[in-house]
Length: 214
Image (tube, rainbow, N blue to C red):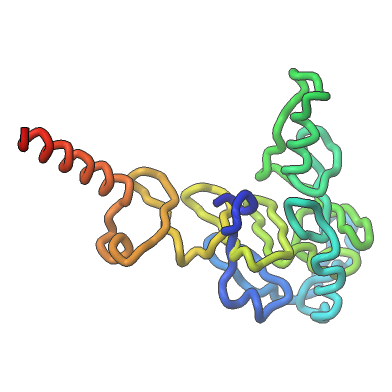
C-alpha cells in the first residue's frame, strides 16, 4: 500500500477540481498562486497563483517512468545522478551489474533537487516549476518528495508510517497499538478496536475453548 507498489495511493474529491494539489502534513490543499523571489538567484519565480490552468496542465501524463507519471526527474542526494524516480534509482544501483559494496537505495526524504521535464530547469523541490510554471506533479508531498500526476490512486501521507500511501485516507487508519496501517470497516471504525489485537484475542479464545472441551 505504499504510494506506488499497489493500486492504492491517495487524494480526495479536490483531485478532480484542481489542476495542482499539494500534500501539506495530513491535508491536501490547492496551491495558492503568488509571485515569489528565488532566494539564490533573486529572480522572480512562477507560483501557482498567476499561472493559468492551461500552463499548469501542460504535458500532463506525457512524462515519467513505469512507476510514476510526473513532469520531473530527481537528483539523487546519495550519488548526485539524475533518475525519473527513486525506484528507477534503486533498480539501477542495486543491479547485479553493480559492485556489491556500491549498491544502495535512495533516501526519499533527503531529495533536495528536481529537474523539470519540460524546460530542463534544475531547482529545489517544489510543485510548480520556477521557470516555466508547469505543475511538476498533480500530487505532491513535500515530506516524501513524491510527485505523481496520476491522482486517481488517491495518495495521502500517513504520519504514522512516515511515508505516502495510496487508497484514500478515509479508508485506512494507522493503529497506535500495533503500528500497522489497517483497512477500516464499520466494526473497527466505531468500536476503535485494533484488528491485529482483536484477531489475536479471538484466536486465544478459540484455543481456550478447544482446551476446555477436551
